[in-house]
Image 1 (spheres, rainbow, N blue to C red):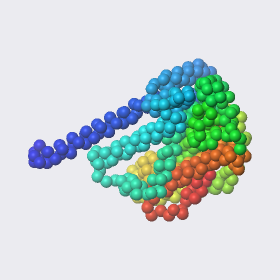
Image 2: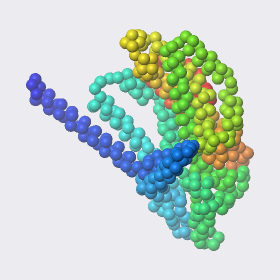
Image 3: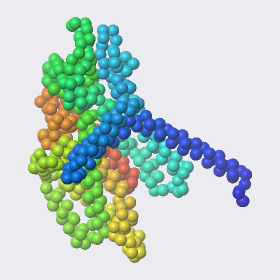
Image 4: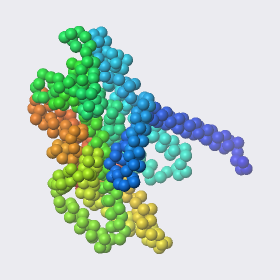
Length: 489
């Protein structure tokens, strides 16, 4: 190449080759991470699709098509369940029995508690490894492949990395999300075996009285492991019952495993919370952009509307709407979770809208907005391309905090017997179930889910604080009603 010395050519070659190898290694690592869990991913996708299609109203000629689609999705789900994965109960089994000499059926013959702990550690090691892979990819792109040497996003990421409180929140939220995603794998038993069809599943156990291995249904075993106050049958946290079943959080008053109940409930809480916050964010963002762009009467009308909604006690409104709409077709979707998400969205968007309206109004006064108008761009395009990117950071802040508030509200409604219908697992219901045993030997039933709710909500708020300080280091932590109220829940 003309004008290029041999040293410059060699320097460029030495920089290009390692980066290509790094990208190849990074891509290969990502392929392996996905491949070892491809079956579980496909099972989750097809299972969710089958559940969603099952609640679509079948009208006229669509009935046969919908029925075929649901059947196909269930068939694909069953086929995906047969695909071996690394993080499965079959690879790390913890359900076995003592045969008088050793443990049979558990991972490497370990005790059930140790075998379960190995599977949990493997799941979280995989999750953190996946997160590390994503971060390495970002750093590789930032240093080797991005055209710009610096962007404002770099400073935000660097500020967040030095924000200890924000990183604590990120770790807590990440571990909660992993619990929800890998709920079927993390539990010492399954929801179907321990809760839904307990009398159709059998387990082998060592009978010390007869000195033989005997068989019993899970339902019958649960009747003999009920945690009811100071009952001698009570199974406390980190104990193995007389049937060789390990219970990390003890058992419920009906003898079912509390940890399995909690991990299944985490998925319910996360899905409802994400749906509610997503709908609230869509409404709040759209209305904030419209109010900031048109101002005047449009802004005043939205202010009056939001004030009217905020004037009504949200908890009472949630209770009223949940009771009125109970038993309707929409209440049957996802055990009432979809209805709960809709109610949260249409009663809680005002808090997020209030938080986004100010930044949107500031952006609307910028010179580039006037320039875009002068070039004849449509209002929709101006709001989408020139205003939305500047309030996205605030959306992340208040969205994370609002999600924590939604989790508290979901648990509160379940505690009152509303919201998610029984017997679907939910954290608030576990607190309600163990309420009468708080001062007895079965204190763990209410205490453990209560502590988990506190930690998770604190994590979401801490993550929101970290994002806020990373985006705007001059912000006042005392500003914003959402920050102090947990999203107005």
